[in-house]
Structures are given as C-alpha cells and as structure tokens.
Image (tube, rainbow, N blue to C red; front, side, top):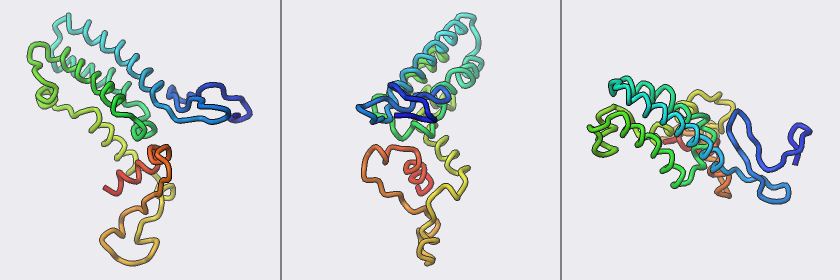
Length: 187
C-alpha cells in the first residue's frame, strides 16, 4: 500500500498518533492499542514528575494544576479521532492514570476515586472525552455532516433537527469518528 507515493510498512503515524497497523497483504486495520500504549507511557513519565513535586510539599491545588496542565492533555490528545474505537480495557487503562494522579495529589485524603473526583471537581476521563468529542462535533462545518431529517423530507417533525443517522454495516466503520460524532450530536 502507498500513501502519497511512499510505501507504508507496518503502521501509519500522523501528528504523533498511530492510526493503522498492517493486518495482512495490503489491509490496514485501525488499532488504537499502539496509540494508547504510547499515551500511557508518556503520561506515566509525567506522573513521576507529579510524584516528585509532591515531595516538595506543594498544596493539593498546585498539584492539581500541574496534573490538568501537563498530564491530562497527554491522554486527551486527538480524542475525536480515536475515542469511538477504544475497547473497555483501554478505557480502564486510561482512567487509571487519573486515579493514580488523584491518589498522589490528595495523599491521605484519598479514599475512593468517586470521592476524589468530587473533592477536586474533576470528572472521569471517559466523560471528559465524550464532552470534548461533542464540542468538536458542534464546531464542525455543517457541510461535512449528513443532512438533517427535515432537509431530507421537508416535513416538520420531532426529529427534523436531528442529523440523518449513518448506516454502518461493519463495526469497523461504526467505531470510526464520523458515525460516532453524528451519534453524539443527535443525543
């Protein structure tokens, strides 16, 4: 397989996001495991920095700012591209980053993940990813999205403002960004 006249061997990486891995002869499958592993490795190294800063007895508020500024953006990079294709295990692995960060930030005040989220005012990473995807979808050019139901048949119904659902015959396409973003906009 060639992209822009250059042969592609093994994987395609763009903007530090690994998008595809080779599956067979000329077939490429979107696999987000390489991307998730790369993000986790980078986030873990930054969590080490957070732990080291904790030894200097910084306040929980300062450590929370460091987390939201330096660690969390790593696990949220290019979210609209890969969020729909995550497996449950990958979601859990990403959520563990925030659990460990909150345990480091709150020290002795940490009891459970839910109580730590309430105490710090943060939301789960999966909820935040969905919000980021929804914000991204709202900013998309309407010409890139399918027409609304009202535009298709001209009737004024309850669902006339919703986008026409994209029919997906395969899970591979269903877990791609466009059908996922259309689903978010309709809900």
